[in-house]
Every structure is written in structure tokens, then in C-alpha cells.
Image (cartoon, rainbow, N blue to C red; front, top):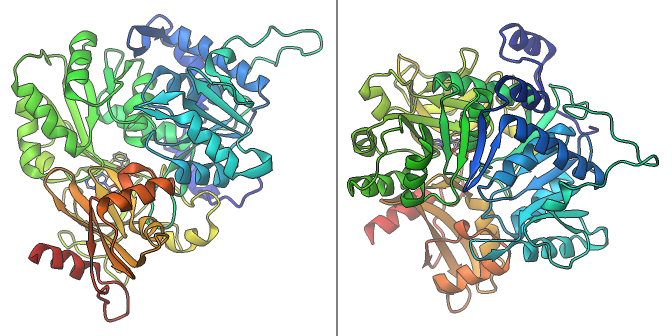
Amino acid sequence: MTDTQHTWSAAESARYRAAGHWQGVTFGARLRQGATEHGGRVALVDGDRRWTYAELDSEADLVAQGLRGLGIGRGDRVVVQLPNCAEFVLVWFALQRIGAVPVHAMPAHRRREIGHLVRVSGAVACVVPDRHARFDYRELMRSVRAEHGPGRSPRTVIVVGDPGQESGFVPFDELRSAPPSTADAPPVPASDDGGADPSDVALLLLSGGTTGLPKLIPRTHDDYAYNARACAEVCVLDTETVYLAVLPIGFNFAFACPGVLGTLMAGGTVVVAPDPSPQTAFALIEREGVTLTSLTPPLVTHWMDEAASGSWDLGSLAVVQVGGARLPEEHARKLGPALGVTVQQVFGMAEGLINLTRLNDPEDLVCATQGRPLSPDDEILVVDADGRPVPDGTPGELLTRGPYTLRGYYRAEEHNRTAFTPDGHYRTGDVVRRLPTGHLVVVGRIKDQINRGGEKIAAVEVEEQLLTHPAITAAALVGVEDERWGERTVAFVVCSGPAPGAREVAAHLKERGLAGYKTPDEVVEVPGLPLTAVGKVDKAALAQQLLRS
Ligand code: OOB
């Protein structure tokens, strides 16, 4: 790759290898090993469809052949925007098999986010469903390509289902039936990973972001496999593990903490849930004997309510992980007894660092903290506004560095200058307290991001879009406490004419191509935005104003 890549120093890399964290094996090669070790075991379940490890491996070969036929190869980026379905996993491993790089998009993303991902990553292809949740992804891809002009980028759109008539749109199923090789086109030499190096970028994750649009996070084979394997060890996964993917699989939490990858690396079974409702999930738990799953806090209350109906047998479920946003302590205390499970809090980030409570931690630590770092080599600093370490128990910003935490965002030179300390610590923007046990309590944040039940919203991004409305002359997006979401979004707007209502604002942002979850829950017109002493918008004062009204 020609881009400047910020990565670990040679000394650090040597240390992580010597410690056994980095094992020097690509994901493509790991799948091959899995087929040898666990060949006949069930790896993946989606509805009535099942794949053993051997079948997953040969399916990845087939799809990989089709991808090569489309001219996709080592190092090429491919945006994967699929709901929870087996094809996500199949195409992900097929891309690994040819050394290509999946870019994890979310099903909720729309024209603005996908256009941005395609542009920044330089993606040659996108993988989408035909329709999902009453939304036509082929339309979305048509508008992304139209915006990108004559190059029609991305070149290829792979559609799970019916691709329609558009040129450049190909059905996923066709990839599996690539024509047999001929004398003119000899078979590509068999390879487990298209010649990828374990220190190469294996995938690009999305950051929740605090600036204009999501940043891309490069994760290497070495670092991401360690992430998944170490989480699998903490959760004591083995060949008997059955993991239910309820949250979107593109989300790091559900994919590798330990999620899909950790389960497959342990020889267990991954079951994908088509939606996160407790009814769908509980039926799958009963049918498949699910042992582990992961949730965000807003789902926890729904699950407890449904479990109270007493009509489900959740006996197989042993551990429920909760993360992505702060879990209220009282919910943490109720969840274990309500579902008959061990609860694990997970405070992680796509950038790397994962903290988890351990399965044998005392109840108070499990319920009142967000866990402790995954790796003995995670370096943790809690610092004051001047960057000086604070004593345990005192809140400060969390900085971190370690064997699976990024050292630079992808193609974001300017942002990288401020997102890291000069010695390579990532500034998380989270305010935490560290206990003497090493457990962290998340008490707030300094980044201008709103966490709506685990979905991250960069205030600046929405504010910029609000300003494109003809009547809005100034805007500030503020997160306020909310029973259901933890936080909901309120847009304070200053207007030059009649103020648009929440509905009109929603329609405007949709028209601009913004994902629906970024639409403000409430719009409040104000005569002007209050400023702090240094002239920044005083968001704390705005939040206060709302509490008083
Ligand atoms: C996970 O990843 P992201 O990248 O969507 O969001 C990271 C941010 C953190 O910096 C923090 O602000 C917040 O989400 N967060 C939590 C939390 N878990 C994440 N805040 C309070 N309590 C928690 N338990 O959200 C993520 C990635 C991997 C595993 C779990 C979550």
C-alpha cells in the first residue's frame, strides 16, 4: 500500500510476537486449519441452512474464485453492508482467502456514509442485500455510483438476492458458480490467503467518530486474531460453544469480542439472528442450545421482560455480555437472575482496547464496573486535562496503547496528529475511574459524541447537515439522559424564518442521505446558542436548559 501507515515499531512487534499474542497466521489460513481440526462440526447456522467447518472452507474457496473472476485481488477494499446472514461470514472469509480487505459498514448506513466509505477506502466493490427491513439497497448503490460520476465507483456491486438489471450488479449466487478454468485461463494457484502477510491490514472497521464522518480503523490479521482469541479465552469458549449473533455482525463487539471470529477460532458454532427481538432470539436459543450472546443496554430490558413471561427455556444460555454503552447498575443486578446467566460487562472500541469483567469476578465488580483490560500488555493511562496521570479513583481521560489498539486511522493524516499522543497512545475521549483491581468505571466522555444505546453519533456530522436546511443558521446537537436509550439527541437550532419541526428536519436529513439513527429525537428552537468563555458552544448549558424547561 502506498499510504503512510502508522503501525507498531519493530521492537513492539517483536515483543508482541515473543509474548505469543501475534501468531503470524492470516484469517484465510486459519479457516483452512479450522477445516482440518473441526471439519465435521457445525460452524455456521442461518435459519435452516448450516455449514460445517469443512463446508465453510470449501464455500470460501468457491466464492473466492468468483471474486477473482471479478478482478478483485490482494489488498483490494470491498465494502460489506449486509444484515446478519450467513453470506456476511461467507463473503468475509472469501475475501480473506484472496487477501482482499472487507470494510465493515452497518445496515443502517445510507448514501452519505456509504459514499464516504467507498471514497476513503477506494473500494472496488460493495456487497449488499437486495432489500432488507423495507429498504432497497440496490437503489442506495445506484445513487452512490451516480454521485461518483464517470468512474461508476464502486465498479462492482454484489447483491445477495435479486440484483435487478443494472450493469455492474452481480448476484452473490453467481460467484459460487465461476466457470471452470480453461487452457486460456488456468486455475489460480491454490492459496489459503492470496499471499497476504499476517501483518497486513485484514479488515477496516468504522469508528463512532467525533468529526465529520466515520474514520476507518485498520486491523491486521495478527492484532485482530489476538483480539478474538484472547476474548474467547476470557469467556472460556470451546467446541461446545454456541454463539448467537444478535447485534449487527459488522459491529466489532459481535464480530470479534469474542463473537463470530472468537467462536470459530474455538471450534464452536455461530448462529445468526435475523433481528434482535427477544422472541426471535429466544426461539433460536431453545432450538440451537445457544450458550453465549452479546447485547447493548437497550436490549437488556426487552429481554428481561420477555424472559419474565416464563414461556421460554433458556437453560442452555450461560453468559450474556453487555456493552457498547453504559449499563445501569440496577439492570446489571437484575439481568443475571432474570435470564439465569452470568453477566459480563464489556467496554470496548473499534479502535482496539477491550475491557471485560471476568466470569468469576465478585458481583459488585460485575455490576458496577465496565471490566478490566483484556491483555496484560494493554497499557492504560488515566490523565487530567494537562495529560498528567491521576491517582486511582480519580476521573480522567483514558489513554491506551497495546497489541491490538490502532496507531493511526486509515488515510487520515490530519486527524491522526491529534487523536494520539506523541508516544502513540490513543486518546479514547472516555472519562473513567480506575479501581485498584484495574477495573474501569466509565463516568463520562470529553469527545463530542452521543451514545444512543450503543449507536455512536458524532455531533459535528449532524450539525453540518442541519446547517444545510435553508431556515437553520446555527445548530448544536446535544445528548440528554434517556430512560430507554441511555441518551437521546436534541438539536438546538437558530432559525432565520419559521423553524422547521422535527418531522421536517428528519425528512431533510433523510434527503441528504444520512443514516436514520442520526435523526434528532427532538428539535428545539432557540434565539441563539450560548457560548463558553473561550467561545465554544456551551452544550452543558443547553442540556441544563432542557432539564429546567
Ligand atoms: C463499542 O465500540 P464502538 O467503537 O462502537 O464505540 C466505542 C465507545 C467507547 O469509546 C465508549 O465511549 C463507548 O463506546 N462504550 C461504552 C461501553 N462500551 C463502549 N461506554 C460505557 N460502557 C460500556 N460498556 O461500543 C464496542 C466494541 C467492542 C466491544 C464492546 C463495545
